[in-house]
Length: 135
Image (cartoon, rainbow, N blue to C red; front, top):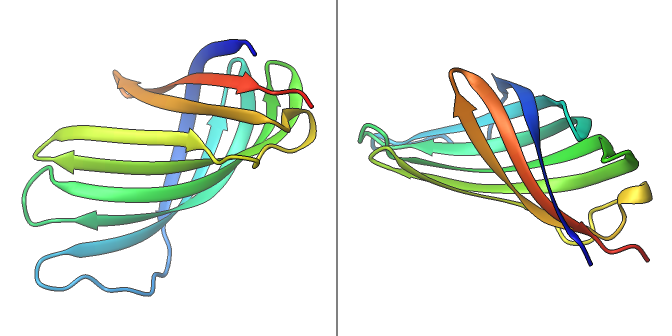
């Protein structure tokens, strides 16, 4: 199996949506919709939801999210689901962003991988390392 590494730009729009849990004792719990457009070797759009917790300490927070990506990856059509797990500890951030196993559809069936996100001068970039186990 060959490991591929691609990168490109993406745009993201987040909007608050109604959530169930309300934060207490200084914690702000949030829920947001995610809409993204990826350009480059990943030419796709995604929709998903994010849950977040902001603490009273500046730069300390956490979030989880699920988004389904639909489009083309290196010319192959289909979809897959990304799972996010992010934390910030007084500004030091850690982000895990993985393809959910067996979430690939169409020509992307058998996809696995992980994505890194970079923000440089206000522009969002992705670095996506993946393998495609063709069945």
